[in-house]
Image 1: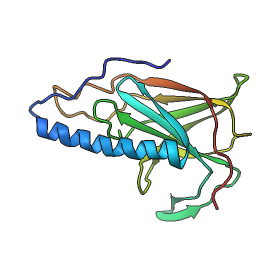
Image 2: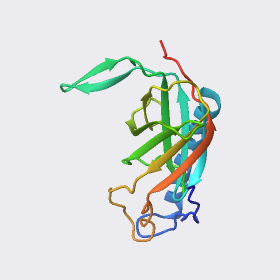
Image 3: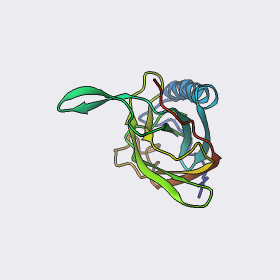
Length: 184
């Protein structure tokens, strides 16, 4: 299920030069540092390479967030949800966050039962953009988390570097534990 392929490194082209490649990689390094902090210090989580991507997950207690309702942002607290599942998808070539994706997450218990399957929508976060949502789960785990990233429909610049993200990717994280409860 974890699709490993040769990562297509960025090359100089009519759209990007070596200095700009270096800048893109510095952006990616900063994001990867934040991602390590999130998955190792701030919350439970881990990451894996899959195709053109690095895919990571993290779990925290369910939390409130602003939602758009009737053209206004309205704060909504979690109701029955008890975990906040985050998925971060990065470009394996430079480590930067990939926006505009359709990301699905499926939680499977130890008996093979699907506990839930949800689209993880893009969430603005003050220091780490991610795809996520609050979930209701029966207990902290262990679970298998399956993440599927669909082929994005956004255009790609650059005849030399732009042919990437052209296949759906699935990756599994077995035996994960989720942080459960609600942030107050």
